[in-house]
Structure formats: C-alpha cells, structure tokens
Image 1: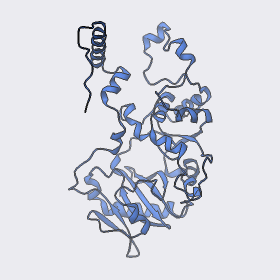
Image 2 (image 1 turned 180 degrees about the horizontal axis):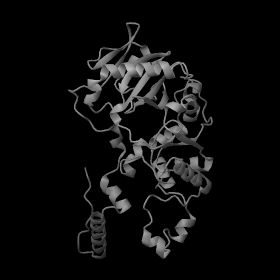
Image 3 (image 1 turned 180 degrees about the vertical axis):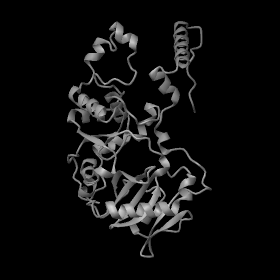
Image 4 (image 1 turned 30 degrees about the vertical axis):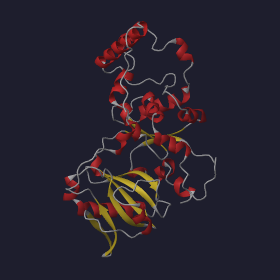
Length: 346
C-alpha cells in the first residue's frame, strides 16, 4: 500500500463524505507537547485538572480540601487549552463519548476503565489514551507498511470524540473491498457465536452488499479498503470506521493470503456474495460448533488485584496489603527472625 491509501482512512478525511451514515463526532487537533506526553514511558500521571468521574467526593469539595499535594501539583503535565476543548466536545455530545485517534481506538486499555470505553470527562479520555499500545502505533508507526514511507516523516495527530452509542457486538461486520469489488464480509466479534446472525445470514449478506455498493464504493477514494458497518435496530447501517486493505488491519475470519490473492478457500460457515449470479466473495460467520472464546484484548490487562490496589476500590485488599507491609517492617527490625517476603513464581 501507499501512504495516500492510509491517509484516506484517516477519520477526518472520510467523515465529511459519510456524515449522514455514521455517528456524530468531533475532531480535535492534538498539540505536539501532548503527543510527547503520550509517548513517554513510566507511570501514568494525568495532567493537571484532568479529573476522573467521582474522583473528588462532595465532602472534600465542601470543605475545600486540596485533592493533590501542592508540590506534586506543580510537577504535573499541563494542557489547559486541550483539556478545555475535550470537555467542551463532551458537553456538545451529550456528556458521553467514545475516544479514538485518527485510525485506532484504545480498546486494549478498556481494562483500566472498568472494561468500558465510555468517557464522561477529559481525564477519562486521557487515561485511556495514555494506557494504550494501539494509540502509540497511531502516533509512531501508521505508515510502517507503506512502500513510499520515509523515516521520520510527520504523522497527522487528531483526537476523535464520538457520541456514545451502546452497540451490540454481534451486529458489527467488517467488509473487505478489493479493486472496488466486495470480496468478503466477516462477523466483527468473530470469537463469539450469535444465533441471530445464522438465522438471518442470507438477508444480512444481501443488505450489507447493497449498502457497500450503493453508498460506499463509488464515494470512497481507495479502490481497495476495509470498512466496518453496524446494523441498527431500524435496519439502517452506520459506518463505524475505514481501514487500509493490508496486514495492518485484522483479517478476522479470513486470512490475508486469501484476500490479497482473491482466491478464497472453502469455508464451512459462509454465504456466497453474488454479482449477476457469479460468486465474487463470501460472508463468513462463527458457526454453532465453535467454542466461545475470550476477547484477544484480555491479554493487555493487568491482574485485577493490581487495579483494585491502585485505585483503592477494594478496601479489604488494601487492608491486607498494609498488613503485609507491617509484617515486612517487623521482619526488618528483627535480626533473629526470618524475613517474610512474597513467594516468587518459578
């Protein structure tokens, strides 16, 4: 692929073309100092003023107690104008948003926010961005597989805030378009089985095919691309996102060897995509006999105990941790006693 094909999938480039067929969104340019902040390694430290929902109790507000130590407050990163833009956008989108950058969303960091990407404050948006490996890819490596990429070339940096919608995972589908022809459709949440997909597979295949050809193919600038669609309860489709046609995009129930060659192998759970009675592709779905599997995003999580301790959300674990610290302290003070330490896994 070439850079222009990737740039055509940048959110701000395709959103104006399909505004009436997608979720209301607001795009904010990311300042370079904030980009550097996102790329820094180490402990996640939120900028000054980036509070999380419920971070400050009512009693603390009434008594005027300081939330941060003054010395710590002075050392915090500071992006007041950017935070103001985020909060204003959240208000304009009715108080709940889904955050992403120009290409990727921080879905690998959902564990840090109670397994949800819904944000109510600028602090929650920044926490997800700062905790995500997918976001770092957007900031540094999005042109990595392009044949005309140049080392060190600038990458457009933009924050996208989308109005929050409770989407049913089983109603999202990824479409693979090759040379302006719909080559494949895959169930997006392919590790789970949804019976209603199988019951309605023929209609779904035809409806998706009609939408792609009637609305997207002649309007989108790339000849080859992928597009994620969501079928709403009223039967209409939303465009969720565009991605390049290549290995940087998940192939789901297909392989890139199949897709890049155009030679699709037999698949026992598929519906043929036809064009004038000629098979041109397949709609693949997860069959009955496939065991349900956990999401791949779970591999990015840290142990739940760590999350509980760091947030103080589980008082019992916090008390146990303090007792352990006291035990360690007493052991250090006594030269006759064997020092107690946490067991080491081998």
